[in-house]
Length: 532
Image 1 (cartoon, rainbow, N blue to C red):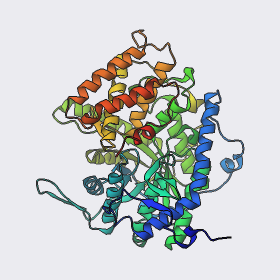
Image 2 (image 1 turned 180 degrees about the vertical axis):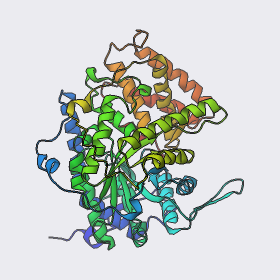
Image 3 (image 1 turned 135 degrees about the vertical axis):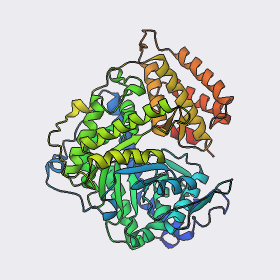
């Protein structure tokens, strides 16, 4: 039998790039070969797991409810812990997140946060330029040469005590159409992970700084096990000790909350914690129950972390993590400073303080912010209530959470203002995303793909599970949606907001997705076809 050409030449059958040599320093033969090898070894499993997701959702659509697995009772009841956590990650009280844009990276590393999560996923629009510039920016940051010069001549450099770098690749479901192997489109997750690891893993290991990763959108222990095997293989190829690569997993899907023990177990040689990815979790609740008219949620502003199903989720995560020796990270504060209105800014910052106080007193080991100005606010709260580096000693044995608590719908209303805000956020974010921006400030909140997805999912459900009423008892109708979308499209197109030039294109996409009889799993998948 003939030996496949790819076994002789790993670059055979690969096409990576946009037809130019603009990123030749990232797309080196060694790096491309490394990523192509990951594809050939793991793509079949990835596709099989995505098929399992689709089958699982079909069962939910038919009336099934998520629940704890019966075949993994021994894992949940067993006496085991995760591997020791590295010194660099022992104190994670405040983490800042943001896209892999050059100035953002420098400001985040200098922000005073303990950790910077550099994001290739929900806060980044995955144009080829964004992804490759991001790889270059992170390589320069790891190498110590990153700097940025503003148009006014101001120079930005990383200071002496930067935050610890953690990288979030795209989720298993996202493709990268600029990368093909043997005629198949590669996964965005392996592209992001592979190029970063190829260029930076050895340097970070030599400095006892990882490499460290955040893993998004997982739904099962099998998906976690796939990441574990990918990283174990990468460590072997790159000459790193087994378990060098450490991960934190975002629990941001409803199916995953029923498998937290199992996910930790699948990654036990490298996992250091779980994170309450609250916005994606709310979206996942909506998506999971898209066919369940009895589980509609009220408008987004009313679905806060103190509602029963979210409180149960966060407290169960704390208890699960600490039982296994892993950190329980809190969620994102979406507020940003409000300039020119002291009263509004004070109110927004009060919400941040209350949220972080809830997290630290519940037992979380750290929290997320999206803006550097929020770092000292969040840190002051955690410093006052968490004098130790973490709270692994807070076992939360008082927490007893069952299935019904995790899936109980929130009680609330839909106001006309909340409906209109969903239309506006969905449109403006999508337009900006099509224009290459993955996080967008809208009405003093930092919106990313997750919050736009909440808005989109709610609009679809409200229009497809009638009769749904506003708080004034008037019906929520498709004509009201069409009118609101047309009005906001006109306003956006005539504005200086990000994405103004893509307003009409975004509106057509949002209208098609909202009116469609079938709910699309992710906004970013059809939108990706419109992206440069």
